[in-house]
Amino acid sequence: MHEDFHRVHKEFFMFTGIIETLGTITKLQMELGNLHITVKSDISSELKIDQSVAHNGVCLTVVGLGNGTHTVTAIEETLNKTNLHELKVGDLVNLERCMQMNARLDGHIVQGHVDQTAVCTAFQSLDGSWEYTFEYDAASGNVTVEKGSICINGISLTVVNSKNNSFSVAIIPYTYEHTNLQQVRVGSTVNLEFDIIGKYVARLMQR
View 1 (spheres, helix red, strand yellow):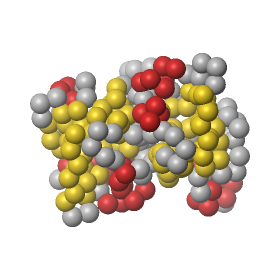
View 2: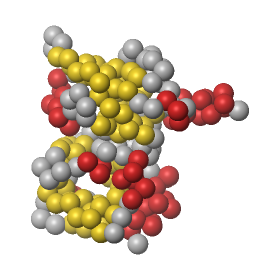
View 3: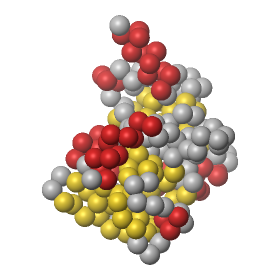
View 4: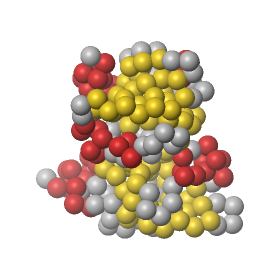
């Protein structure tokens, strides 16, 4: 029931790409084609059943609550389109509750609808920052623009070195320490949500 409710109503929820906290995966349970994901976090005790929370940028509905934990369910379609199927117990996951309408938009408009995944092809530590390069399949028509916005694992970031099927991002120490980018290395798969304005412009250009 909760997943059906979420699929009908999730388009009304909006996120900012500013991660609230990191959660730790404590349990993973497959049931038919669905994956039940239990997460321990600082905000789990504040959540409610049916509340929408972005996990690595994927908007999911809370279906269960425990002692400092919460559980969400990812359906088969979601698992096929995101990196959630790669989660393991002990992994870190980026968490953000949906935006309140009277709050500041510190990141950019994020829907919690992952467009596709990308693979990290390069990682280097710079003088006080980190640079990641990601490559994705451009066949779906998604594009990035220099200095535009991109959402990676739910994190609002600025694109640099934009190319047809790849781009880079520069990460400051705070973002590195407070998100699961600290675990991303060459070969890691991440979730991408492209800028909503760019997606509309791309669709108009196709027409």
